[in-house]
Amino acid sequence: MSRSGIARTLTYLSLVVASVVVLLPLLVVQLTSLKSEKEMANDSGALQLPDDLLNFDNYVTAFQDGRMLSAFGNTAFILLFSVTATVIIGSMAAYAIDRYTFRFRKLVVALFLVATLVPGVTTQVATFQIVDSFGMFDSRWAPIVLYMGTDIVSIYIFLQFVRSIPVSLDESARLDGASAFTIYRKIILPLLKPAIATVVIVKGITVYNDFYIPFLYMPSEDLGVISTSLFRFKGPFGAHWETIAAGAILVILPTLLVFLFLQRYIYNGFTRGATK
Amino acid sequence: MTDTTEKAARPKEAAPAARPARAPRRLRLRRGLTPWLFLAAPLVLLITFTYAPVANMVAYSFTDWDGVSPELSYTGAENYVELFTRPELFEVFFVSGYYLAASVIQIVAALYFATVLSFNVRFRNFFKGILFFPYLINGVAIGFVFLYFFQDGGTLDSVLSLFGVHSDRAWLGTPVSANVSLAGVSVWRYMGLNFVLFLGAIQSIPGELYEAAELDGANRWHQFRYIIAPGIRPVLSLTVILSISGSLSAFEVPFIMTGGATGTETFVIQTVKLAFQFNKTGLASAAAVVLLLIILAVTWVQRRLVPDDKVDLV
Image 1 (cartoon, rainbow over the protein chains, first blue to last red):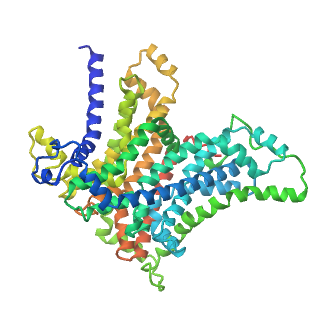
Image 2: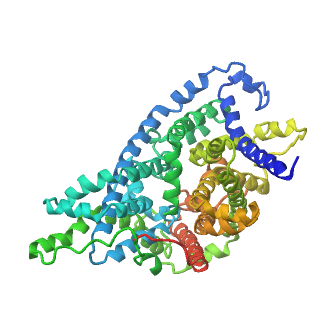
Image 3: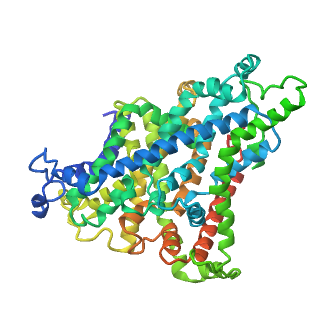
């Protein structure tokens, strides 16, 4: 084999090894989720195939006893409100910052900028007191306001896009008598569609997967979102790995579907979201 | 920060154009008010949930408050002294070392795969998807997947026994192997994000550069060293900051998998426990202030070292 041939083989080898490292833990959990309690007790080893590849009993148990239905419901509720609010708030802020010159504009921008440097995990001790004083502790509004209030990345993404919309569009609308809000509603917002898609995806995935905030702010059992409900599997299902595995797969599945359908947008979203 | 807030040159279009010269007074007043109407909600949220907590946190850190009772007394720097003198409170910083080491591996691997997959490779999108996907998975699900992975007779032991290695050890049983295992899970989880960021940056480098370099007889290593590496410097430095602050504030994976047992307690786990289990809000606030200061210092140093960071926000 020539030298470049060897290099090529090694390249592919490294890619295959990496893929196995990524997929193997997930595949094994998927297999485990199809095993019966008896099979698990027989201790046949994690790599053993299940006897019945269509045994979905564990999924039923996980879904019902793990209260996954209410978990998906709570997650959907929080997602809907926080993502919508993030889009509206972020685009309004970006519109005001880009299209207007006003006093303290630089200060406002600096406030948003410096806030990115404060990692959310460090301030929760104090944030908790504020959320509590509003009476929002242990309600679904606590995570919603926190997701709305801490999202600076989306403002940046919107800023990039608002900037690329020609000002002449605003101006001709203003000559036709449109107010600032009409311009935002009828001209800016529709042209922001690609940015909105990016923000919805990035924000949606973050909210869907977040554990820390719901864990701290919504301790009630019936307020579980998918992360905290899955976390509670540790107690009742302690040693029942087949049920825990089914729960984990149930939570991963929607992400996988969204990823397969929206791959290209997701990559773009994350490249944009993180570098800006 | 001044360099970032300054108006960068905007080639595409001019700054918000001058308004028609003299509007009547009432109209002018309304114009002056308009941006604030749009900014009211975001600013209120920003101040309530970011700046007010930071200010309160600094204030709490000088008190002995328990987070519940109405009484609290000023204790000066006592919390900070306690933090730095009680070894068990300080130890959590050493745990971050494991995550820091893991981020080095993570960045190198991400760079390698991003470089390889930016050239023509068969099944490129397939590999790209596989490498990125873990980043999108729910943290709790990942925790469970890897708890099972590291179990006695779990995935790892089964794979090892395929190769004839029979390990009779609990992977999460001793502090060192537990921390190494948990840091490994972080690499598994976050490598994909770095990889996609690098890939995006590499793809924005014009292709002619490689062609020209190839004509000049450059091999892949030369291309990486002289074209790719300088081209992705801003993203690379961003990744370094994210990795350092991520290592210092590691929480989810260790909390879900071990709850901080066997020497895997990280700084954030400790802070959460102090504040919400032991009701030591004052001490927890001091800990959080220390973490915040470290992260701000890291960011500041990085900005000094890589000043040409391309940040054109406004």
